[in-house]
Amino acid sequence: MTRQDLFQQIIQKKSYLCVGLDTDIERIPKHLLKYENPVLEFNKQIIDATKDLCVAYKPNLAFYESMGPFGWAVLEETLKYIPEEHFTIADAKRGDIGNTSKMYAQAFFQAMDFDSLTIAPYMGEDSVKPFLGFKDKWVILLALTSNPGSQNFQRTAQENDEPLFEKVMSHAQEWGSEEELMFVVGATHAEDFKRVREIAPHHFLLVPGVGKQGGDLTTLSKLGMNDHVGLLVNSSRGIIYAGDGEDFAEKARASALGIQKEMESILEEWLSVDIEE
Image (cartoon, rainbow, N blue to C red; front, side, top):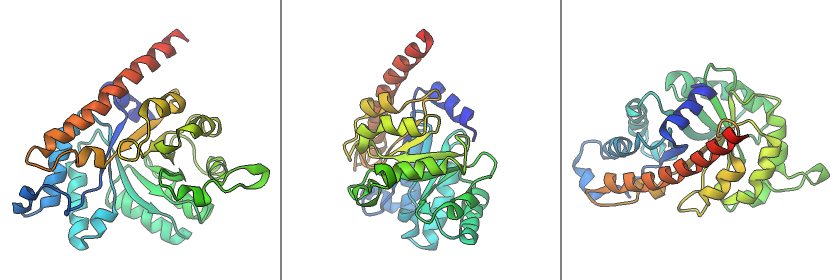
């Protein structure tokens, strides 16, 4: 999927919502356990309930890998079920030496055909560049994550008191353009979005941490939007576990709809300002 394709989906759906499929068999409604494949059934019903309200889905691979070979099959079937117009994110946080990264890239971009993959940049340029250069595929590089531990290293001062996450974002733009590279910036760091946009004004940002982690959608949107909106705001637990009964899909839809309506209002204001300018 190209940057323009993603932008058009956002405008068409009036949404920049990404639904995280962090599906834990211990948390899905008990009535689904009667199905031969409860996790897949859960995912299908969540997708059916939310597909018109979001532009992306993000399976977190840990929840599938934990089930062994069966989990990989569930992941593959889930990916096939996601409508073609949606942007798909393999939340795998890969990153290793060049040859290994090349194999990971082939696995996720060619064998499984995800649109994008989250990458940890700690090992540097030669661990990231093998993921770049695939037609209409994206690297989503961890920059400033939403978890408390982001304070341990990502904010560590470098030369000229530049935090490490800023150095990562600056250097990474020498490896890939805004047409193939995104950054993860957590919603719990809304105060940093102005600086993030100074460093990377044109790139899309994947923004976790809205909902259960407390990130404020309106604040981060106003600080983080660019000329292509430039945001994919992820919500996982707040949507998929909004209900635990037989009406779980309806509850998930209601939660997603609440976020989408807020996004629609923000986009209307953004478009009116853009037209005025």
